[in-house]
Amino acid sequence: MIHEVDEVVKRLLGGGALAGTGIDISFEAPSRDWAARRTGPSVNVYLYDIREDVNRRQRGQVPVRDARDIVVRRKQPPRWFRLSYLVTAWTRTPQDEHRLLSAVLASLLPHELLPAATLPPALAALGLSVPLSVASAQTEARSFAEIWSALDGELKPSLDLALTVPFPAHPEYDAGPPVTEGAAVRVRAVGEPSLTSERAHTPRQIEAARAARRGAVEEGR
Image (cartoon, rainbow, N blue to C red; front, side):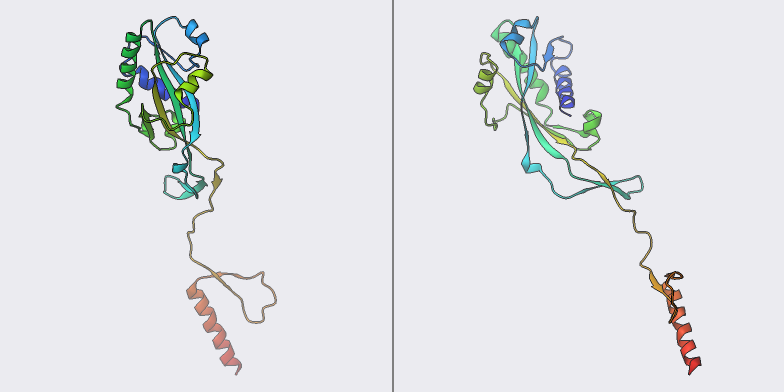
């Protein structure tokens, strides 16, 4: 599912202010080695943190209905995870990098909530929208300085991009068939030795059987 979130991010960036520019969008770690290998202007989108949004966790079961609105399966509700990306611009001069970051920001700001219909198939199948935030207050335990230090790179201006994405919980299991008939009562004649001939009767049939037994008792008197 994470790779599909990468596709969403790449489509948002490539279809916004960067459309038609030919600027490379990379998901590699922005290390010194990567910086030395790049050959032109690039936007680096590095996934640096994945953690569950426990505030969105739900308990219980979710019914799965068919075209007739009948519950045919049940499943656990999805778990939500916050995927955080470090977005940086790489060009020859700081001024060009700042312009590139501005274009990235302009491409992302209009998309605060991504509708399910705009997501890749596996995400769209859940029917849930995906919240997106950019350049918001950092809530992760690690600072950007620590991240750059771990990457053995130099601190650069960056945007923090976060998508809170539902991940399906497994397994699903079949639900019991829907109830289509009322309760049934089994009756048998007084003194009948075997239960093999028992069968379900409607209330009208039960009442008729009771009347027949009462008649038989009265005749015996």
